[in-house]
Structure formats: C-alpha cells, structure tokens
View (cartoon, helix red, strand yellow):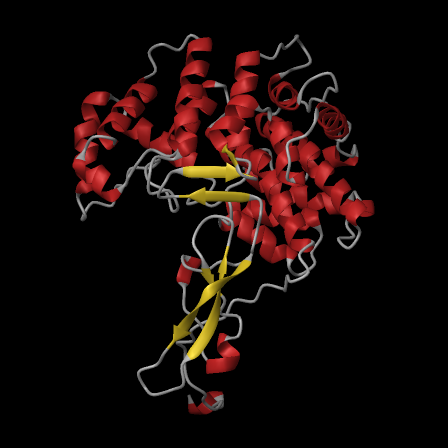
Length: 433
C-alpha cells in the first residue's frame, strides 16, 4: 500500500475544525481513505451497514472488479486458471503467492494426498448426529472438532504449525464432506485413496460402495475440479470476513474455518446455487418463463429470479461463462440431451442478456445459475451443494487467515455502532413498574 499524493479533507457545517486523512493506493482498484484516527480527532465513527464502502484489511490474494466482470487470483485471471490449472495448483498459488514449479507441484500434491485420512475416532463422532442431519450441520461440527484431534497444529504463532494446519484442512475437509454425505444416505464411509488425484478421490469417497467397483469419470472429475477452482476464493465476502474476524481473536485455525462454514450456510451466500435450482424447477418449462419474468419485474410480487445479479459484479460474472461451458460438457458426457432445467436456464440467460429491464439493472447470470444444474447432473443432492462450496472455499479461507495472522498491523476485529436504544435511565423496583 502506497501513500497517495493527495489527502482527503472532512469538513463540518457546524464550524468544527476540518480533519485531514491520508489516502492510500493499492496495486489496482479504488484508493482508500485512512480513517483510523477519525474517532480520536472528531469523536465520531463512520456508518456503513454491510461494509459496502469499507476496506477491512489489505490483502494480496484475490481481486475482483464488479464493473469489469474481472476476478484475479494473485493477479491471474480466473478464466486462465480454470482452463489451464488443476485445483491443487490453484491452492498452491493462493497459499504461496506464485504458481508452483513441477517439483513444487509434485511435493505439494504428495503432502496433501498423505493428509487426506482423518483420525479413526472421527467415525464415531459422526454417530452423534441424527441420520437425517443436514450435511452442513455435520460439517460445522466435524471441522470444528478437528482441533480436538490435532493439537500439534493449533499454535498460530508457530509458522510450521500454521502450515501443517493449512495442509490438513485442504486435505481433510473433502474427506469430512464425503463422510457427511455418506452418513446422510446411510452408506458406509469410503477411505481416501492415494493413487487418485484430489477431485477424483473426492468423487470416489462420495459415490463408491463396497459391493462393486467404481470408476471415476474423468470428464466429471475435471468439471468438479473446475468448479472448485471457480469457488476457491472471492475476496472479502461474508464467510471470508467471518474467518478473518474469528481469527483476529487468536482462535485456532480449525475453529476459524468452522465459523466460515457456518456463515457460508446462509441462503444469501453459499446456498444461492441451491436456490437457483429450486427456482428453475418452479418455472418448470420454457413456455412459463414470460409469467415469471413479469413477476420478477413486478415490485409488488415477492418473487425474485435467483442466480441473477451479484453483490459485487455489475457485469457478467466471469465464472458464469466457464460454468456454462462446464455444464454443457457434463450433460453431454452423461447423455442428458433433454434437460428441462437447462432449457429454462438457457432461455432465461438469453432474455437476461437482451431485455432492457435486466440490462438496466445489470442482472446478469452469475456462477450459481449454472453450478446447481451441473452438480445435480453429477448425482449430488441439493443438500450437498453448499458443502461442495465449502470444500472449494477452504483454501481461500486458509490463505486469508494465514495472511491476517502474519500481518503485524492486524488487530482484533471490533466494529462500532450507531446506538439508537434508550438513553440512560434508573432501575425501578418491580412494585413501581
């Protein structure tokens, strides 16, 4: 971060003295006004619900430009990474800041693969959940419980322990996710296999059964790998901010990631692809689209088109373009030619890109619009969609947590408030109330 030549001046109409605040440049993106001394100088806080105009940290990991429809991991466009890298190569990039050499990649893959098993007592831990427990509830509990099994990597002041914890979570979260899926459908857990790549191993743990051989479809494995890359990180979103806020207290990394998973569970965040799929099912067929378009435009109708628009992107979500192609590849590989949901999705996309209402409001299809269809075709129930998101996002959370812990200027998170409650008053005995 570089100090800009200009400064920001805050003036008051009541005659109070003006206040000068420094302005800083990032590598790319908007400049920021440093308000850290604002309260000391003025006795006032800023007010920014949802933090729409507040930078909570400085970071060198991920950048997105919503107006341009641009997403960069460590400076690399998401389109290049999703088409040229595998997920573990992307993980290495997010963790270390550079793409690995061949030897670094081989070593990283080896270390992640050898960490995929979880402690055998974890299997008994799962028995504490009801058989119909939501997989995300299982994930929140089981990931948090890792801190009870791996005491040798919870000291956040030790760089070696931080890295071991990072490796363990990237490796073990998919195993726990597959166990959560198997538990909810009543099938036995499947152990990871070291001869399989990261995503193929996950598919095998999800869909293999002891009574017959299961062969991972390479097209589906590559498609899921690409989905993982697209969801690996997304700057300071709600769950990432949750991980950073939890981590700012000095909490162990397993607890921080569990907090991120809990936040991701919300339908406005990680559950958006499930909501988009339910919407497509509700529409049902192409001939009913005009009815729902009219409802979406009606301010008095509570219906909303899910999978369109984004809190950040005010242009076409760059991940959606890749996800659309991936969706077609999966459906073609599985021989699904007449998929009503895809027909509805394609027509909705065509309308959204040509209708003045959508263009004016910048309601472009986002990544959730296509990912739900793709995951459903691959055999995952809707209850697993957010779990898969958590598997992908774990590396981003870890990279952000690690960056925060290693930042000497980091302080415990403590947002302030605009208090609107009762002014000071005295207690009255119950007989006088």
